[in-house]
Length: 324
Image (cartoon, rainbow, N blue to C red):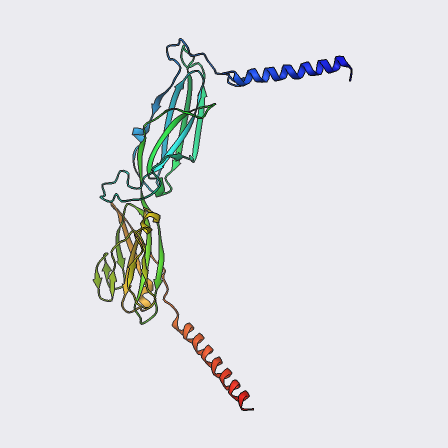
């Protein structure tokens, strides 16, 4: 390479380096087409929330019924902002219940993932060429875990700093999320139990429906006895039907929306397979067939007899071997 070419190549590298260094300190990026100087304008250098429909959205929603549709708009200078949606789980929001001993790590806001998200921004909204950012977050009411607080934030596009935010709104989703058999022991002609896990908001009114009686929690009728509703499951001993509560620290790990109900049966028979449970929240009543099955003792006894017969045969063979 000639000296002239080397000089030209070196000059080009130095020029590119200088330009890149200047760009690093430039407050206006090349792709920020909407950038406007804010000094001396009526609006000033700031970000301001100008629309928020939170008051219209706040309230109580039924599970699997409708949508949550929240919108916010920010004006800003010198450049437009990003809009971020946040959610803070709070199980007892908008609740008139005296239950407030929930222990959890949900006292912080987390980024909200919208089922449908719209974001637009426009330039030159006013004589001051104010930037306007608009966002709508749509959520399907599909889970009671959506109960809590919602808000939107205006985020600086360069630094990620929160420049402005809306006030928070409270949303409560009510309904029965799930019902499942947590544990059961049903041996014919023996005492047994069925323990349910019911996840719902709020605490439902629970009734056990048997072929002969209807029981509320803490009631005893005929062959049945119902335990109190608890926030953590009972631990039942195998040899005796004696419920034992789990350690108190188990409450910290429990789901605030889940409850446990247990039915004791003094003498299990085939009719227990028709057991149902009635769950009522406000005016809504739902009846669930539990589809439980009692244990097949014939199968178990057959296995025991088979093992016993094999043991006898082996014993005889061993005895004859010793006699030789």
